[in-house]
Length: 318
Image (tube, rainbow, N blue to C red):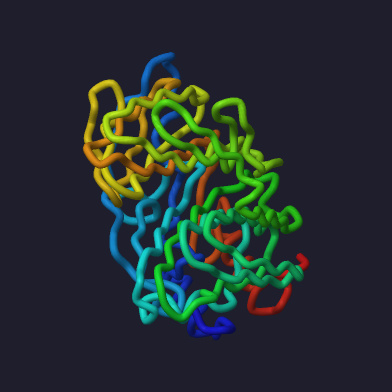
């Protein structure tokens, strides 16, 4: 997106134009997988390959949630991965753009990016950093690479907010790598970003959907079992290697996302070269979802109001 959204850019977004921190087209009811209910290992309900696309000021990325293959997994709206050693694929970044009605979660695996926003927050995300930003009633921010060469690898996840919190005050949690607990197990290694694992609790706090977010590294052939709330929707994104998931041992390769079905336990086995997994789970919201460009609300009328508030300068500060 340009440094400021022009009227034309706003209209393009309204018709379905999207940026990496600006969403996908479509306005629909929340039709994600039903919450899990049984006390069993979770099978793989769906495998979704991440789709190549470009967003922001031309940044190359892959989208696993928010594409036509998986538009929504309540409360998750979007999952994007940036992974490139070519500066021309990422250096222009994501200049100023607005949000309302949801939260963005940024996880840096390698490289560095800088966040600035209209509320006055500024942070430098380095390898291992996590940022959880609640846009609430409105925020304008930028996310710009702070490198001109080398590997830039990171993820952004969009998490919906319930109707009662969509117009709440913006909130920003910037978490340095040293604050993320690390746990070594017989199966490998875990970084606990949110939720609990191995007696450690992640630093992300005060999130209404009570998320679990784990960066898991499995050694070849090792088996990991981890309990998840039976009422939470969950997915596993394979960052590297491959893994066999669920009681049936469904193979999931790098850059594929596995939607987990009903149950209360993740079972994962590292492939022949091991695997690195991003496990995410959260409580579904179960409300209508209307989304267009950079805004996620409950109705089309609320989206129209969000665009009008942005054009008139009323979005930020509400």
